[in-house]
Amino acid sequence: MITGDQHRDERYILLVEDDSDDIELARLALKQSNIPTDVVVKTDGRQALEFLEQLPGQNTSTDQKPAVVLLDIHMPEIDGFEVLRQIKKNSATKNIPVIMLTSSVEEHDVMRSYEYGANSYVAKPLNFDDFKETVKKVGNYWLRLNQTATS
Image (cartoon, rainbow, N blue to C red; front, side):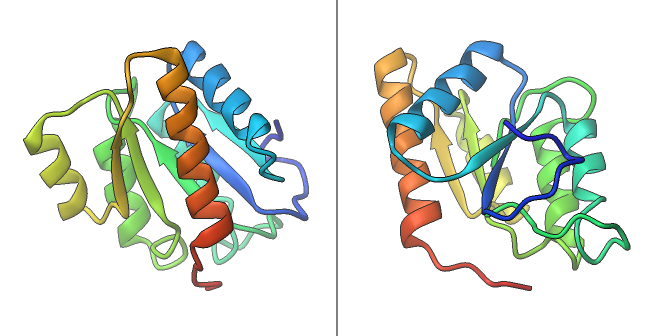
């Protein structure tokens, strides 16, 4: 894992998640997928937004945006909906793909996520093995197959 203060030469994932078990499972799944990427973890919405404020276009020394943000909805401080809304309204971060990775399967949460600009909505499976497999698939798609804008 890298922190927000380290220099990045590779693409990385910003994981915004407050559940320590889900954090460790996501890291393990990505490592087992042989996806060459670091994972920056922020455990609440406020931390995530502060980190994103340090990105290019925000007059700082950080040199690269995350390849993708994996964002939980239910978190302390600032929830995932507000983080998503802030990411998508900011010209410096609006093109970063944001995947809602959450336990909620409520239709209103899905709709609200897409209304705020989510690129994908993935419900976390309850089974650990299924969760790991889901994260592997998400990582493979967004880091290997998907083409993202560079600005």
